[in-house]
Image 1: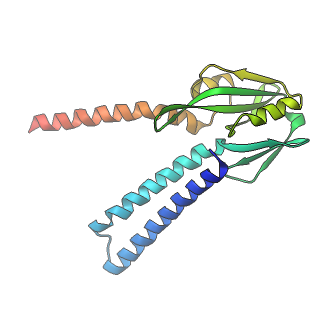
Image 2: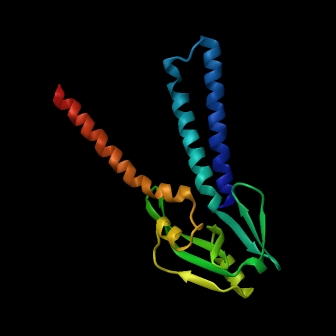
Image 3: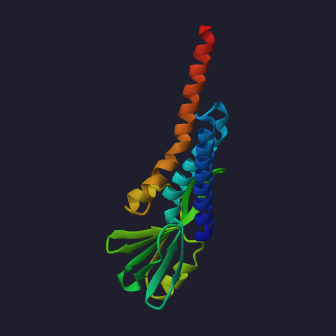
Length: 194
């Protein structure tokens, strides 16, 4: 994902939320109360808040990076560009298939993990693997993990390489299944009582 696309997504969800808040404020001032017709802006505002929250939790790992003569320059969706001196990077770990959940199932992404000694000090998902080749050209050793890895497995192998949001989101499909089963059981139970 590009930095621009992430920023546009967050901007649109924020604008939709504030538009719905204004819509509700005008409706309540005009009618004196929030009526049943306000269900649409409330639902849209809720969807925008959920989209914004998910975006702010997951987008910080997506970045555009390029290597200068002495620094790695990293642009993220949120925050100012960050400059990391190449001298502090002892090793680059490239995870070729980090399986993050998406709308169509687990989608593999490339994760770059920067290490200093035995600790991870930065991890990000670049738009391509060009930054890895640039770091390798500067003499920084590169280790490649080719097998598919889940966020939980990567967090165990390289602590700090996966955010809490990515670990939680990877469990959400199972949670959705459990909630669905509970709802169906509840509805069937209610139907049998009548």
